[in-house]
Length: 97
Image (tube, rainbow, N blue to C red; front, side, top):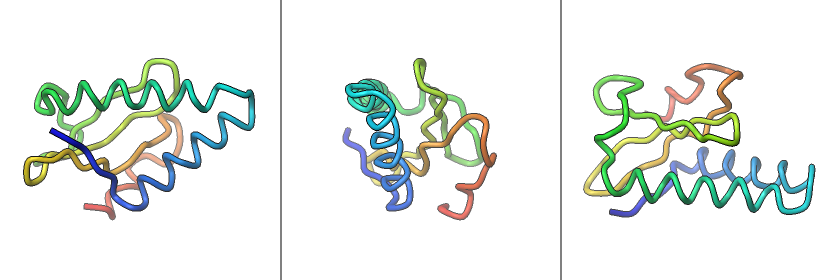
């Protein structure tokens, strides 16, 4: 299975990469590597992760960075709805459903 982004989720994801890279060279690459690793795991078995919002929005937390990836499976593909900071603006992404 593959994944794709909601346009707003892709923008916030790329902003995070740029932010971390601006703080320390290579940190943005570390963020991106962790994101890619968890998305490979998600694509293998998306139903393994807890439902955040009924009926089908699920969540996986990043380990090193303070973000959670919110996603759903649609038409045999994982759609990333948000890459949300764990301490800011809870459920701001609901408008993307």
